[in-house]
Length: 326
Image 1 (cartoon, rainbow, N blue to C red):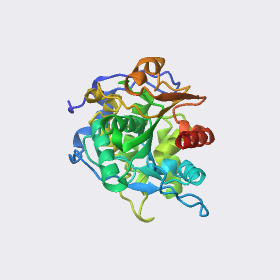
Image 2: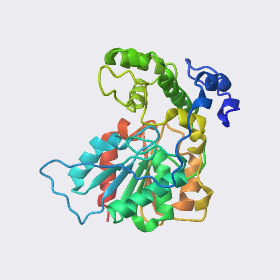
Image 3: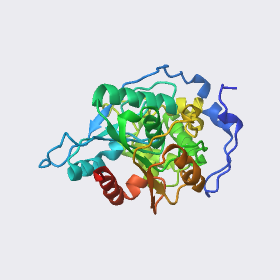
Image 4: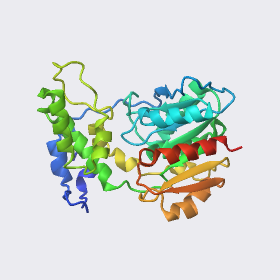
């Protein structure tokens, strides 16, 4: 009907407040057929942020830089605190990148892993110009794995944070989060409210789709702030959520590209698995990771998928140990 597959599906949810989603009804209410397509761009320039160490720490330019790649709905700013801590402890450069359609990066189609890997390779070649240690979470983990497989000379070491080199459908909660953000963008009453009132109402509206308060705060951090108190322009997020829904991007983000089927990365790899998450299965540990990454070490964290924010101290400690390992 709208050139999209999602509206034909019905997801049932185990969470008490969830209900079966009538995708046809949702698409109609969100006027998905009116959403303008994103521009098609093979490569976009990725914004980069340096995570500065404490003022009394000197950067050792002989050390390999660490580049951090965020997950879905995230940005380079997610790593500011841990990035600065790692930079202070190791005296090396630490950078965060914004993937296309996230943070301050340009909006462009397609949004798939091969394209994001090409964007990242382009940035490493043109802007950093030396091998790096690449670390990625969730969506960023798959991007980082692909970069290491496609262009291994650009990557000295790899840190994979809770995702697998395999195709696996995203949990339905991601679809609900996306749907909630879409309804916020379409709500015409929100821009007329005072900032504090609008924030409360947005959180309440989003709570119909996402039970976790911390996840709601994370999702709402994507809000593009209004220029002034009198700015009544429509709500916008840094992620083009309506396009993501229309183009079934979340389905794409569950995939693993077949183009890298016969490639391997033989350098050191640190795999960080969240125990209370389904992103890294036992099958992945037994067969998928060995296939592509023979030189790997696995750590299991007693947390959910948001590993870096749930266990930042251990993440920093094990990242520093891996970086300094000769």
